[in-house]
Image 1 (cartoon, rainbow, N blue to C red):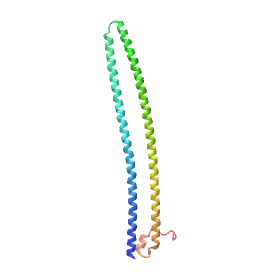
Image 2: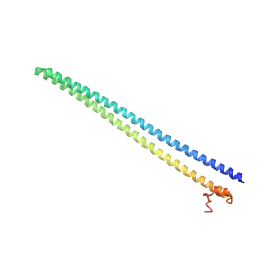
Image 3: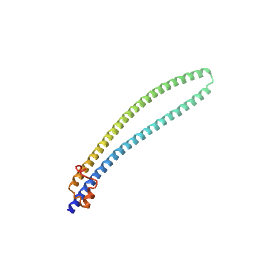
Image 4: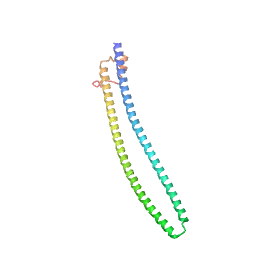
Length: 185
């Protein structure tokens, strides 16, 4: 009889250990999913940072070119003596500025279009992230419900085992200390 109790308690411990390993595995899976999402977000953030840096460098280069153009225009203006030549030069510069303005307007339109596209992509990624978060929360809730169900099953099984354990013995009392059958309670 003592060997049956020992065998039953060993089987009980093995079953409990299996349950613990299942819970550990599920927790590790959840951590892997969360880590994957965090890494993916970090990659997206770094990519956007690089894009911002490239755009900043392009703007700086354009500013430098504009400054060089302004200096050149000033030198030419100071070198022209006759008024007619100055007028021709100014007219030409005016036309250049108009073209540059048109190109700047076109560039601005392009930049605004790119900005809108980037915002749309950001919105899509944000909604995808929210959907993934919702899905993850649902999965976590499902896992928690499964854990609770398994805990309830284990408690019911332990309670059924305690119905057959000899409670006059110390080992029987120790095994069923907190698991009184529902009918006796």
